[in-house]
Image (cartoon, helix red, strand yellow):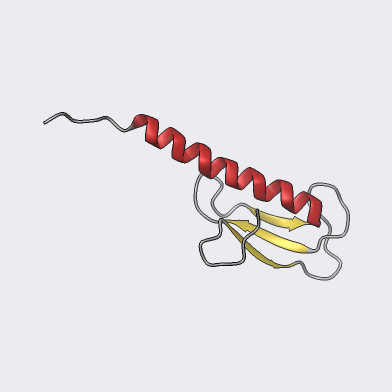
Length: 78
């Protein structure tokens, strides 16, 4: 899920030395920040496996938000 181009839904950076994963307590390897959608600017330090779960959660929230928005559009007849 993590993409390295500019249309990514996750910004990735290195975690400072000695940081721990916020979810499991293992050594953190990355800092991830959600971009856009309902999770915008949520971030934290993650190990690689928890980082993948976080990235999937962000992608799902963006997808669910798009589906919800599409369902609320009212069609206007001419």
